Image 1 (cartoon, one colour):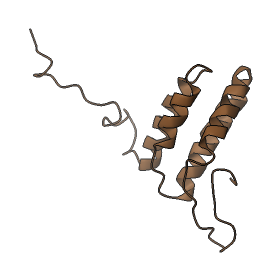
Image 2 (tube, one colour):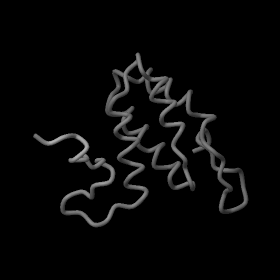
Image 3 (cartoon, one colour):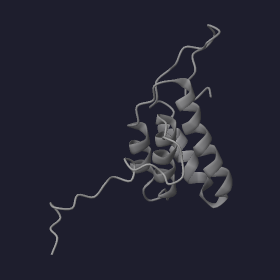
Length: 112
């Protein structure tokens, strides 16, 4: 019999996708956020919001990825529209501001 210590399991995020090139940090971000969004329901929306809020975003492109995933998920699941509205409300102050490339208003979760 094999013991658990003798056969460590690889994290799914540490294993490259079959047939794909090396994953980028943006790919990992998409997978992580999508995984959390797939678990969302009215009973756990605050927990999911906390987990998404803990993600360290490094640039405005990563902020856009998170917003895009939430928006697409909300559009495809209209029966959970109130849940996604609660999620957005919980996240609006959680993410950092990024300076606008043109020197205008900073890019934020709320403004994007």
